[in-house]
Image (cartoon, rainbow, N blue to C red):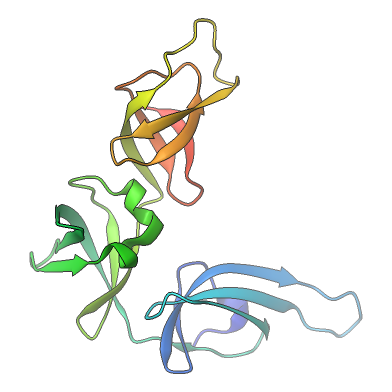
Length: 188
């Protein structure tokens, strides 16, 4: 059973019988003597997708959820649904667009390094790799003399996702994107 002081982003705990994933943890140390550190934690309910904000003291115990993590690869889309394949036994899991949510902008064919959270044989959620490499399919022409630290412009990626990129990039270039922030990191 993890203590509140040990919580990290991505951990899964059980609250009121439902699995919740830790999204953010903020620690606050009160200035009065003898007061214990408080942790403000934002959870996402893996069954309903609803957010939950709770505060805990350092030694408060939480119950770990009975979930397993498996490595999956994105295979293809069947209509609107996303099909993922378990890399160990090649079984397939189908997820609706609502379950994938805003992560869909980072998912391209053959993307590996995805972790699926399973409970009772059902996928509750996905954890994407920290970075993905995608191709720019549409953007304004690159500007001569634009520098790496200069201004940005909008670019549409191969998944349909739109982000801000430096002005020196052009169509058909591959770029690395941080999946946590959704921001451009580097050219590939």
